[in-house]
Image 1 (tube, rainbow, N blue to C red):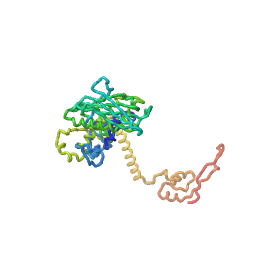
Image 2: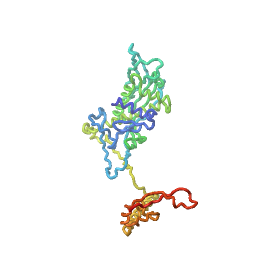
Image 3: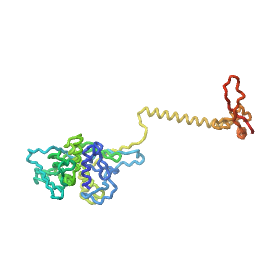
Image 4: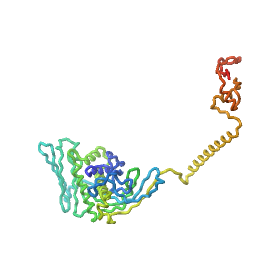
Length: 421
C-alpha cells in the first residue's frame, strides 16, 4: 500500500498546478485532506476511515476505521443542514531545507556509476553517498532501460537517505538526476521532524489544517518515530524510480517548463508531504479498531495519549436578532396574513347574509342574464328558479344591420335572438 500512496502524498503536498495547486487534495483511508495530512489521525467519528474491516494493526495496517476516543454532543433535534467541526490536535511535520550540495564540504559527497548489461538494453545504476555518522556511507542500486543519446524525456533520479549520527532525530536526503533529469544537480535536503498543535477543520467530507503552533522537535525518546519516517523515505527512494522515469523527476521537469517556484521549494514540500503521511499512517496503524486488544501494554500507558477538544458548528435556518430588516419582513408577512384572513371572513359573512344569489362573472348563463337588456328579455333575474329556467333557453347569435343610422360606418354588429324557452 505504501508503494502506491507515498508518491501521491508528496505530489499533492508539492502544490504544483498538475496536482491542483493550492486546492490539491490528498486521500487516504476514505478521508480527504487539503494538500497534506500534517501527521494527524481523524478525531471525528464521521471521518474515521473506510468501513473496511481491519484485520491487521501496527505496521501491517492497510486501512479500516480508526478508533475515535472523542464523544460528540448528541443533538438529534437540531441536526441542521450541515455540520462542521473545529478541533485542536497534535500532528507531525518537518522542517526541511533543500540546497545544492557544497562540493567543498568534505563530510558529504555523491557518486553515481552506471553500467549497461550487454545486448539486453538494461542499465544498472549505483548511487553512493558519503555522510557523517557511524555508517559513513549509504548506497542504492536501480535498473532502468538503456537510455539513448539525446533522450530528454526519460531519465534517472537517484535518491539516497543518510541517518547521520547514531542517535540523531533528523536525517538527510541526497538526490541527483541524469539524462532527462540532469537539470537537478547534486542536492541535499535536511529533514528535522517535529510535533506541533494544528487547528483542524472537518467540513463537507474534507479535512483542512492550519499552520503549526507550539512546535517541538523530536527528542531522543522519539528515535523509533524518526527511524520509521526514515524507513518510509528510503522505501520511496527504491520504488519511485521505474524502468523509464521517476514521478518526482517528472514533477521537477513539469515545474521547469513553467517555473512558478524554485526546484528546491518543490522538493521541500514534496518530502514534507511524505513525512506527514508517514506520521498519519503510523498513528492510524496504532489507532485502528482492534489495536487496544492487540496491544494492551500500549493502551495502558496514558502518556501515549493526549486530550483534545473542539467545537461543533451547525448550519441551519432561523431568525437573526438585532437586525431591523427581519422585523420589517415579519411585519409585512403579518399584514398580508391579516388581510387574507379578513377577506376570507368577510366573504363568508356576506355569503351567509345574502338573500338572493350573487352574480358569478365566470358563469356564462349569468353573463347572458346580465345582457337581457340587449334583447334577451325572456331571461329572468338572478333568482334560483330563474337561473334554472334560463338554462333551457336556446339563443342564436346573428348579425344585425338594420339599426345602422345615417353617417354610421358600414359593417354589422352581433346580437342574441331567443328561439325558444
